[in-house]
Image (cartoon, rainbow, N blue to C red; front, side, top):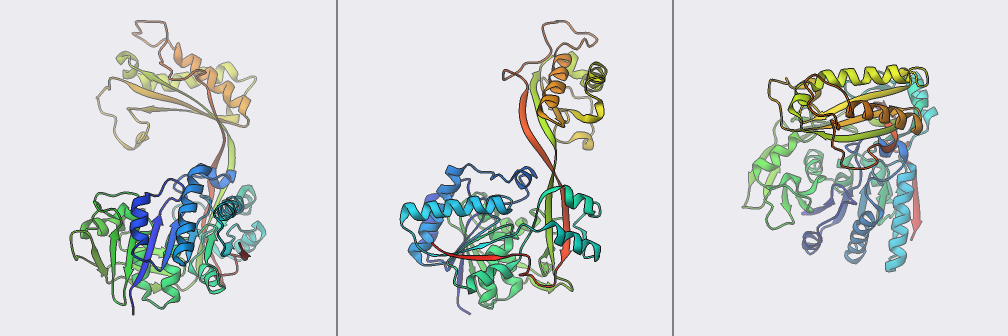
Length: 452
C-alpha cells in the first residue's frame, strides 16, 4: 500500500499552532489535516456551561490557518470535539467561526457538521435495558443523575467521520469525538491495518508531545502497509524510540491495552526503531474487536456558585500550626452564620499550597515547615451572594485569627488583589462518565451537510 501522510496540526486547537512548523509540514503534501479541539482534561465547566475554553481570537486564528491550508492544498480537514466539550453550543460556536473565516477569505467547500449531544430520554431508555455501565471507578448511572445533567455528549468513533467524508465533505467539524477517530477515519476508509493506524492515531493526536523535547508543533505520521513513521515538524524535536514509546503511558492506566469505540488496541507486541536522528518507525500493534460496540457518555451537572480568596502567609509560627487553624476557622464561620446561612447550604474548604494544596492527604506532611505558604479559601454555595458572604466571613476570621504565639496583630494574610473575594461563578462537576452499548455507531450522531 502507498504511503499515507497523516498530518496532526493541533492537539488543543485554539491555543496557538506554531506557523513555521505548520507550513513546513504542509510543504510535504499531507493527504489530510486533523486537529483535536477538545477534551475533558479542562474539567466539567465547559461541558456544563456550553462555553469554549480558548478565547475566540486564538481559536479563530488556528481555524483560519487550517481552513486556508486545506483549501489551498485541496485536502480534507477534520476537526474533532469542537469548541472544547463537543456539545451543541460548542459545535454551533465553532461552525459560526468557520463561516466567518470563509466569508473573510473567500473560501468555498462542502462542510459536514456532526452532532454529539445526546437526548436524555434515549439515555434513560438504554439505562432501563441494562446497556449502560460505569467507565472506571464511578457509581452506577441513575435516571436522577441523567436528569440533573445540563448536557450529555457521546464520544463518537470513526464511523460518523467516515460517513461524512463519504458524502463528499471537504471539511468536517465534529462534536465530541474520540481523539483517535480524527486521525483514524481516512486510514480506515483506505483499508490500512487497524492496529497500525489506531496506534499511530493514538500518538499523533497530541502532536509533538511524543518528541524530545516535547512541544506543541504539528507532527506527520507516514502510514504504510506494515508500519508507520513519526516526524515532528519542528527541526529541533526528535521522535526517538524512547520518547514515542513513553507516550503510551499518556492518560492510560495500562500501557499495553487501550479501550476505543469498537475494540481494544493491544500494544503488547509493538516495536519502536529509530531510522535516523529525527524519526522513529513503529509496528506490531494489534486491534481486538469488541463483542459489543460502546460509546463513552460524558455529562456535567451544576453544583453551585464559587467564590475564592487567595493570600500568602510568611509567619513560621502560623505556618507550623496551620492545620489546626484551618479546622478552627470554619467552626467560627458556622457559628457566626448558622442562623442566616445553614452550614449544609455551602461548602467551605482551605487549600494550602506549599503544604498540601496539590497532594492533599496523599503525601505525608513530615516535619518540614516552609518559609511561606499560599492559602486559598474556596466556597461553593447555592448562589453568588451566599458564596461571597461565607467567603468574606472566612477570610476576615482567618486574617485576624489569634493563634498561640502570634507576635503581631495587623493581619495574618497578604492579599495580591483587592477586593480579596473573587467571584468565580457557576461551578459544575462530572456526573456522567459511563459506557453505553449501541447497535449502530452512526445512530447517535446526526450529520448535516452545508455548501459554504
